[in-house]
Length: 228
Image (cartoon, rainbow, N blue to C red):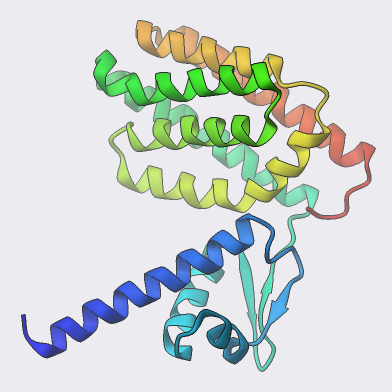
């Protein structure tokens, strides 16, 4: 490997590390909506030069997680109810397509085992009323649904869209009265996938997403949340 290529790989890995760190800080609310910071300060906090920070921020702006403001650095974008509605509608359409693609592959139980594990983890979290663990297992279930469908571009789009609503889902999760209905729906959807029942999967998934979205929009209105 020549020196130039080695330097490029180090640079790329540094950008990726900075990107993931900032992204995780946004999704975990360490950088809450509206949080603003200058690039030099961000570089100092992360212990890197401004170049990887700038490249990482460009990626995050493309994902609609931040906006870059000249001479004022980055600002974490809040999510207003209209945004949440539109992104959720897009996720529903793409995930339904992902389900169809997954079923067309006729996956065996070995392929679906990680999804079965996620369903089991959701059940276990329900029994202990651990909302954080349930949210993590639910997120795993949806990531697997996208990654196993065989369409890499669809998977990337869903990953980007779900990241945009991640903080909102965590907030709304704590406001919802209970998760039993959602937990049961996920189990039924998964069982229909195991059975290879396209019609059942489609009906169960649409019903589940419509109910979850209706609950979310009702909560946003009830608590008059201008952004999340």
